[in-house]
Length: 332
Image (cartoon, rainbow, N blue to C red; front, side, top):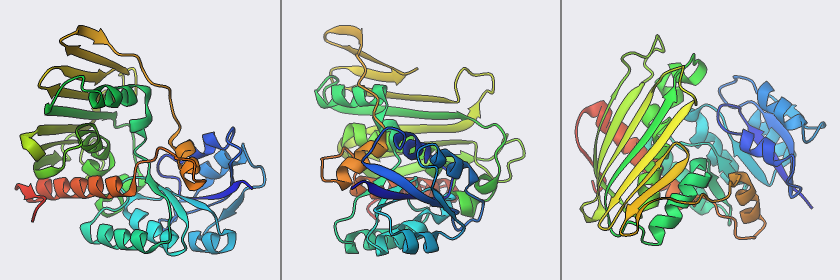
């Protein structure tokens, strides 16, 4: 029998789910609901109808969870409510595919972890979906195979067009901050590609030049000291020009003891003892297909809950550093 899926909110990347529903017969979308922010769910409702014309719409997500009793909940409200909604799902022993950041405060994160470990064998996966792109998957494969030797230095970049944004972006409590929303990908790459833990961070962020978007930060940098004296930085901005050929510009540079690897423009470039080469890309993967596999016990390649919690903590500590203008230790 196909898994029942419900979607809560329409802020982030529920498109992974609505797209997968059009070809993946192992699940179906039974219902969608507004999140606690009460911003509506019409967009995701229409997107879900393409695979299930009979999809239901709820105003209250708690009512939906208790009525529909889904196998998987897709958590997609304003960022500031992610932890609250995730916890409600986990209390009901529902598997979760959550937008990141899964929490925006350290105390929320601790409560979320408690709820996860108290649940009975649930899958909890986050939408760190850039890991699944053909170029980042190829970079990970090459690094794990020893293409650059021992990693010594890393630089990650997330750059977005700003455009005109409203809703959660205008309120820090609802948004969580640009380091958590945009920067979480870059910070995840540093941890995922290196396998090293963070020891301390000094970060800076600014809302200057944000074109009237209240206190929305549009530029930030995070300077991490990692295990084994690995130096790592993340550059984050909403300043990509509107005329740029794409919405985003994702890059990472990994410097090792025997080579240098770069991801830019959807390609992977490597220079080592074999000279300079462009690496073959991996196949594109929809992360929600992997979540479905994991729930069905078929070895789905998900972003593990423990990794999600750790990267979320790193993002929150980096934001704390930027707010407090001081170095923050991960061992405190």
